Image 1 (cartoon, rainbow, N blue to C red):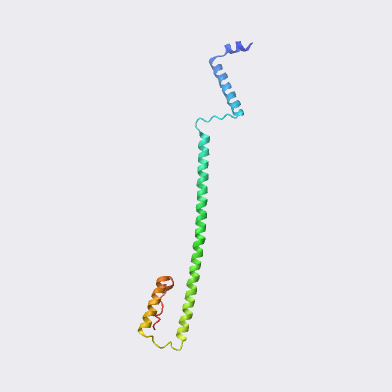
Image 2: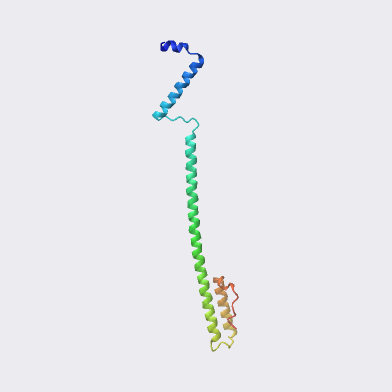
Length: 141
């Protein structure tokens, strides 16, 4: 039987099978050569989604790095502030002890000098309000 007689002998179902086989063979050959057929742009959509996720991940990582750096800087500032407060408290305690043990500790200051000391103390408290949070002894007494 020749190819011509075989083709004439095919029924419509046979023709459909031949066309289907030819399409499948064509697709396999085209893919082997490098032809890509993506009518719905699925590959491009996946690529865009992956790029978007990568950019978002990079931004999140950068934000986390900034948060960590800011936390460290805040901890350093808090530590420095605490050390300053402790140093001021120690200096104040020593000064008050020395003032209480001085020879003239029982002599009251005149009113003008006491007012100047109070004004100076208020100004210091304005500049460093955290240091003055605890009640201070009156320097005029």
